Length: 262
Image 1 (cartoon, rainbow, N blue to C red):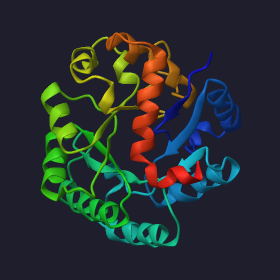
Image 2 (image 1 turned 180 degrees about the horizontal axis):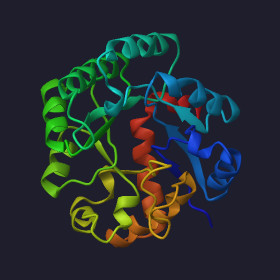
Image 3 (image 1 turned 120 degrees about the horizontal axis):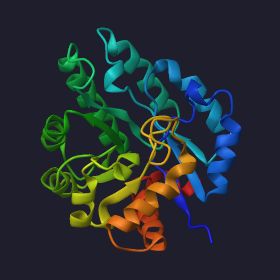
């Protein structure tokens, strides 16, 4: 029996799927993954993302945000266009936004400013915010703490931090997005997940990036969610059915404002 799952974070609109996107989506649904939440990254990706939504309404669900790696000198222009979009229609969340100190630190101050603006959008709209925090977990936690309140919630996507960081995130009312890194030998999550338990987790692939073993190094796919779910079940010493039940419930809580349309 297939257990139902959601992929809370996949760039299925990416050009890396242009040759076989419909096949990948079909395989994903055949594997029991019922919904793919699509984080936006920049102004250029909006059209392709909305086209995928048009072809798969209520199943491929868009979000709106500016990725920290796409924050440049003129980031305000991008945010202005995105703000017009969020005032025009509903999105499942704000994101993906956040901070990234891995690739390029040139615009780190601008990244922080862009993040604060997008946090305010999420609070105003009462939508979840999807946070990217590569090599910048503590800095991201700091900004969320500074702006936190009952109206701020969401997902620390691609969580690879420590138990201490996980507990800080949980205390702020956020969920942890767990993906392919959980299957890597030195990913570190084998120490963390048993300490945290399922109540604070959602599943994601970050496709086309970070494919789980045995696909590591190849293009990732939302169809691999059951592989990640099984790894989480093994680490937390529970069943696949329990992982499905709890992560689906957590996903519904995060995206509750969108559930009436699902």
